[in-house]
Length: 226
Image (cartoon, rainbow, N blue to C red; front, side, top):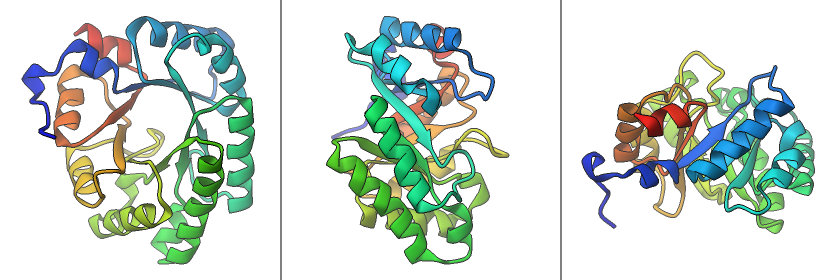
């Protein structure tokens, strides 16, 4: 399918690609309630909330089409695989329908590719058994281009649903170059999520044009009001 040019992407197109996000450590329940309210009002794809707020978000969104996403192994990625699977299962039991898990970056850096694959695959198999979407966060700012391509190959082998650029908690967020490289390194059935540092409509459009299917941002309201 031909990609939409930035000048013809509408308000609705952008909103439907946004994961409205608040993952700050100091996030309050009032902020989560506001996040969910805004997601419903603006037709965002999902909210992405800390694991402790998944059940609250599920209840707030149960009469809407907005999905509930949360993070696993966040933000560093080197949690034990069994812990990641347990985290993901608890999140699904609480009502999450999308899981954003951080890849074991340290293992990839050490070229322990089987460990990386087993880590991703273990979470993915469990989540897919429960009909839950899995997005794998690479943290591209810490990787070389060769490592990004290798990570994408492992994500493809594991059968994930999305590959995501960044946590938003490291030294840099999404870039046009990283999104393009990820898109080129994956089959079309695996989607791309750009996240981290997306604060303007112009940048959002550039990321979509580069191949992003979803945008993780805490600035969703500002973006669609531009």
